[in-house]
Image 1 (tube, rainbow, N blue to C red):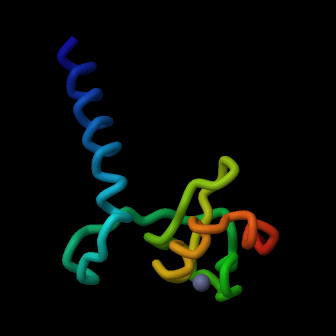
Image 2 (cartoon, rainbow, N blue to C red):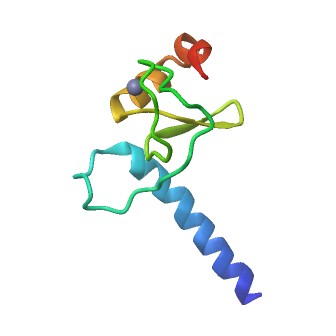
Length: 88
Ligand SMILES: [Zn+2]
């Protein structure tokens, strides 16, 4: 039963850490960031080619959608319908 408790703790930590990741800006390189390889190749907001792994991403339509910067991520979250046609 101890294993399940540890698993629960880790999951709870991950869930509570996520809003903090997007909630405020941290100095670049100071804090280890969550990095993913998104399913899209271009930033849906301004069309900038993505270089692979990024820490700016959201889960959208069951896919991991990457952005070139935090500003684009913020714009997408505020109006996903406007940019969802640009996903490629
Ligand atoms: Zn962008």
